Structures are given as structure tokens and as C-alpha cells.
Length: 300
Image 1 (cartoon, one colour):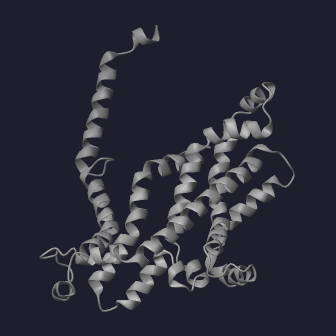
Image 2 (tube, rainbow, N blue to C red; image 1 turned 60 degrees about the vertical axis):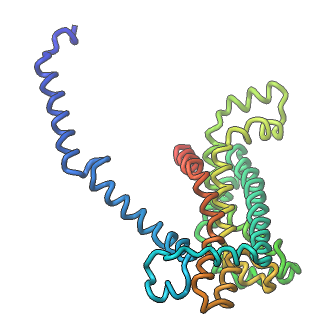
């Protein structure tokens, strides 16, 4: 009855007003898809991508070209700098070291972080809140503060100048953010699902491997990617732990290469661009999963 008595004129007028308001917002350029929004977005994208493009393109130039026109394009394009770096056995050794370190760190962070998050999210005990707060406090504890005692600990363990001396501390410092991201995923799993699994005869470990791990894949992928990229780009810890060039990771390799060829700017740019391309490609391929995992953590 209320619908039949509604005045269609009033409804039409309201709709026209809303449409007019929407068109006015769009014409001002301040709307969600307005030109001002896109201009600002392109500006920030350019600021972020500009230095990367300069390094990559600079590797195709000669030192003379860089001296004459530092911001110009290669004329002609030179492949020799990249070919010289790719022909270096030391470069591939450092790529291997970085790959081993990043993959081992990622595996350790995912496995330990998922188990710790499962205990905090699904078990009820008196110290659960304190344990979660401890991991949260780890987010505010930078590695620069602990680098001296960490160096002493690694030295006493006999792990100096070894990849495990890099992997273990990186796992420890990546666990707080991993636990903080994964706990909401595991808390969002309904208790009825766990009760049904228990009725079917599944143990705690069975429920963990059969139900928890598959359901938390978005969060696991997110934390794994973040741990991989952080390990790949890590510089301070390898700087203190590694002292042999054959055990260097790529960030240290870039520093050593730039010191050795300080006058050969073009070759240094080529080495730098080849060192960062794997992490950029890895991040670009899994960018959607990172955003999806973080969104799920916030919703949880």
C-alpha cells in the first residue's frame, strides 16, 4: 500500500537530482575516477618508477654518454655492460646465495609463523594475549638496534660467514609480521568446522594440516612473498655477518662491485639493475595476492 501511494513525480525528481550531483562531481575532476585523481596517481607512479627506469636504461649506455648527457637515452644502445655482468661467475654465485637465503628464510617464516599463529588463534590459555602482544612488540624492534648483540650471538654459534648465519636471524625478525597477518585468518575459521572435524575423528594436527593450511593459503602467500623480498633485499645483516665475496648476497655484491668499478658507472648500473630485476618480477607476479592477503587479514 505504501508503494502504491508513493508520488512518482517526487521519486523522479530525487533521481534527477542525484544524477545531476553525480555529474557535477565527475566534471570537477575530484571524483573517484576524475582526471585530477589519475594525474596524482600517475605522478606518484612516475616518482616511484623513474629511478628504476634510469638504472635499467643507464646500463645500456656508455660512460661517455652518461658524462655528456646524464638524463638522456642511449644512443646507440650498448649491450656490452649487461653481457659482461652475465658472463661473470661471481654474479651468478651471488644470485645463488641470495636465492638460497631467500627461499630458506621464506620456508622457515611460513612454517614457524603458521604454527605460532595457530596456537595463538585457536588455543585458549592464560598467556595467549601476552604472547600475541610480544609478537606485536616485535614490529617495533628494528634490526639496527639488535645488530651488535646479534653479531655476538652469531659469532658464538660459529655461523660467521655462512648463509645460516643470515637465514636464522631473518626468520626471527620476520616472524612478528607473519604472526600478526596470519592470526586473523585462523581466528576467522568457524569453531563448528573444528568440532565437525573432531567428530569425524580428526586430531588437532589433522585439523591443522587438512583444514587450517588450505584455508589460510592467502595469508601464507602474502607473508611468504614479504619474507622473500625482505630477505632478497637485506643488506645490513649480511654486511656484518659475511666477509667473503664468494658468500655475498646480491645487495653486498652490488656494493662490492660498485667499489671495484667506481669509475665504470654504466657497468655498475647494469649490475644493479640485474640484481633488482628478480625481486621486481617476483613482486609484480604476486602483487594481487599480497593485496588480497592483507585485505583478508584486516577483515578478520
